[in-house]
Amino acid sequence: MTATIIDGQAVAASIRARIKDEAAALKARTGVVPGLATVLVGDNPASQTYVRMKGRACEEVGMRSVGHKLPATATQAEVEGLVRQLNADPGIHGILVQLPLPGHLNEEAVLNAIGIEKDVDGFHPVNIGRLAMKGREPLFVPCTPAGCIALMDHVGVKIEGARAVVLGRSNIVGLPVSLLLIGRNATVTVCHSRTRDLPSVTREADILVAAIGKAQMVRGDWVKPGAVVIDVGVNRVDDPTTKSGYRLVGDVAFDEAKEVAGAITPVPGGVGPMTIAMLLQNTLRGAKHKAG
Ligand code: NAP
Ligand code: L37
Image (cartoon, rainbow, N blue to C red; front, side):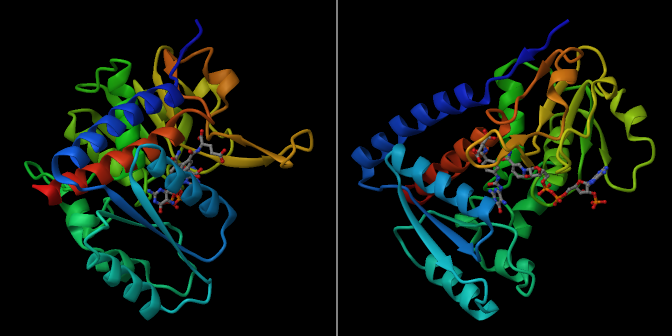
């Protein structure tokens, strides 16, 4: 059997087209143009790429984007000061602080400083707390986890009642995607670096979400036949045949897993584009919220 390849690029493009229409309608009705502020501290090359892609994606759907860059030596007070200034800016409806921050900065305090009504990454403790609790609604859901669920919904995966295994428990991906799956009535197992005998756990999964940041670690024989595999990993591996000297691979050995899975997301072109589409969706939501 060969898996259905879930085309995240195409799904994301259709979401962006809908957002573009909605943003135009909002502008026509209220005069409000949704605005995203990105904050990049330091010069992590992957972060620079993602922040640039996010800004460009905003402009392509008729939103405003303002990129703020601070040097790696920026102080805690400078970063928090910028966040507070953006909180007070009426033209900004979403604030994204790209992670990771340089080691000397207190990430928790920076994320706490973001006004929750502009927390388009969904990392503010109040938003995460609401995501975790039954019967509460966060204002914003973190983008990458929301993208994983949206991809599954798009291809008609039945999440309710499924056995889901999430590899990784990070604040950005593993933990919030686990919470979303629980909220959708999956039975969820969360694995991490201390999990014993990972393959025996993953082989039970109807839905397998890989977010560990280890190139092609999940092999074909880790996958249950017919399972849905969502590969969140974006890893650079050396490849002298490319212009950049590297290529991107996921956390899953795609060529092996696609022979076993029922459906699988590729890297690139899977979850990555959905992360950006969900960020646009959250920014539009922030602007609509404010416009009333
Ligand atoms: P992270 O903060 O480094 O977290 C990695 C998680 O994986 C941790 O929970 C860690 O366990 C676990 N882990 C690491 N090695 C493991 C192993 N050998 N076996 C089992 N578990 C292991 O990474 P992240 O920010 O979640 O990102 C994960 C991947 O997703 C990266 O490749 C990143 O580039 C990618 N990503 C993609 C998008 C997208 O839009 N597509 C967005 C964000 C991230 P411990 O908790 O025990 O340390
Ligand atoms: N929201 N996302 C948010 N906040 C953060 O603090 N670190 C971080 C974060 N992560 C993030 O933005 N990751 C990410 C990863 C991949 C893509 C976008 C965002 C993406 O679009 N990847 C493309 C390939 C990009 C490339 O060519 O380099 C893909 O197809 O997977």
